[in-house]
Length: 543
Image (cartoon, rainbow, N blue to C red; front, side, top):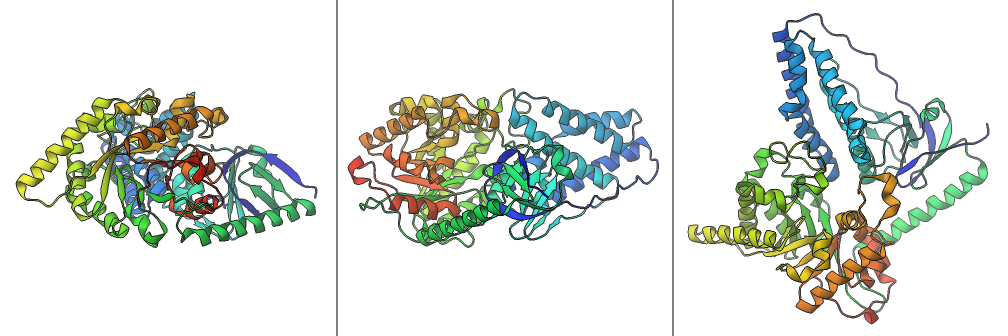
C-alpha cells in the first residue's frame, strides 16, 4: 500500500511511529421509563450533583493544567444559570434527558458560532459536561480508554474527561479528525508530552494500518515508506539524546560559558507538583499560580488552608525565594460566584488585580495568609494584570492593614515584598510609574496585548510572538529600569522555557527565568553555551 499523507494542525509536539487505533463504540443505554415532571427535576439535580462529585474526585488526583480544566468544568456545573433552561423545559413537561440535552446543545451551538477560536474550542468542554450528566441520567457509567503501547488513537474528537481518565500506553499519540490546538485536550496533551495532531478531516477516520504522527509538523502519514521511517528513527534518536543532555544539566547551576550566573526558578500551579522535585535543581520558585488551587468559592475564604499551602511550598524551597501570584482569576479561569459571567471579552475585562480589588473580602484573606506564611521563609507577593499605579497602591494599603492587624493580635507574620506582573504594555512602556519591589514579565499576555492577537487563536498565532522586536524592546526597557533602580526583573511564561527564545531574552537583559520544572534542564543547557558577560551586568538574580 502506498503511503498516504494527511495534513492537519500541529497541537502537541513529538513524533510517534505506531499503529492506528480506534476505541470500540459503546452501546447506547436506554431510559428506564416515564417519570413525572417532579421526578425529572429531582433526577436532573441528582445527576448534576453526581457529575460534580465525580469531577471533584478526579480533581483530587490532578494538578497544574489538568486540575485547571476539571476545575473549570466544576465551576460551570455549579452555575445555576447553565441548567435553568433545562429545568424550565422539565416544568413544561419535557423529560429530563431531552431537556438537559436541548439546553446544553443550545449552549454548545452558541460557543461553536463564536468568531473567536478560543470560545469555539470551549464547546468541547460543554459537550463533555452534557455527556457526563446525560450518562448518569441514562444509567450509563461509561468506560475508560485503554490505549495500547505505540498506538495512535484515531477519533473524531476527544473530550477532556476521556483524556484524563484514559490509560495511555508508552509511545502513544493522538490524531483527531476535528478538534482545535487551543482546546483543553490539546493543552493536556502538551502537558503529558503526548504528540497530537487535530483537524485531519473526516477522511482520516477511515484509515487503518501503521502510521507516523508528527505533532510538531501537524502531519499523519499512513503506511510510510522506508526512507520516511529511517528519517523518523534518526530524529527520535536525536530527540532522546537531547532529553538525556537536558537531564544532565538539570542538577547544575545555570552558568553561561563565560561564567555569568542566571537564576532558573520553577513555575508551579499546585503544591502537589513539588513531590519528587529536587529543590537543589532550582533557584527558588518564580511563580505560584494560586488560582489553580483556589478554584472554588469555599477555598477563597479558607485562610488556614491557604496558609498550609504556602507554608508547604516555602518548606520545600528551604530558604530559596518563593514568589506567589495573587489570584489571577478571570479570562479563561472562571470561579463560580467570583468571576463575572458572559463578559464580551474576558481577557480585556475583570481579571487579576481588577477582580481582587473588587472583592476586598476575598483579597484580604489571601493577603493575610501570605503575610503569615512570610514568617516561615522568603516569600514575595506578586500582583497580576496590573494596569494603573493606583492598583499597586491600593493592594499595598490592604497588605499593610492586614500586617498591622496580625501584629495587634500577636500572630506571627512577615512583611513580604510586593511586586507586579508586567503583562500590559502600559506598564512595560513606563515601569517607573509603578512602585513595585520587583517586576516579573508575563510573556504570554505581554505578547497578546502588544501584538493585538488572541493567545488562544491559532489562525493569528504567526502575527506575534515573544521574538517580535516590539516585545523584546519592552522587555529590555523593563530590565533597564530594574538595573537603574536596583530592583529584580524576572520573566515567567512560555517564552522563558523555550530554548530557542532564551538567548534573545538574556540579550534583552534578563538574568532570572521561571519555567515549568521539566524544562529547567533544557534551558540550562542553552545558557551553558552562551557568552553573556559582554552584555553587561543586569540586576542580580534572586538566588
